Structures are given as structure tokens and as C-alpha cells.
Amino acid sequence: MKRLLGFILFWLGIGMTIMLFITNGFLAIVIIILCLVIGYNLFTSC
Image (cartoon, rainbow, N blue to C red):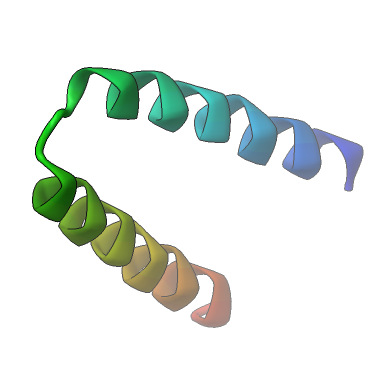
């Protein structure tokens, strides 16, 4: 469980760093929604 949490926090940090460079708010919201949907589908498919 610790490894999974560490993996999630690592990629959360990478995503926040990328969002610093995206100035278009609409694009950022689309990317966030897309990632949430894909992550939910991957999590529930196990």
C-alpha cells in the first residue's frame, strides 16, 4: 500500500509541475477530467 501511495503522489507532483506550464484553464480542466476518467476505469477494472 505504501508503494502505491508513493507512486500516486509522485505522479501527482509531476502533473502539478506540468500544469504550471499550461496557461489555458480550459485545457487544464479537460486534461484533469480525462485523467480522472481513465484512472477510475483502470482502478475498477482490476
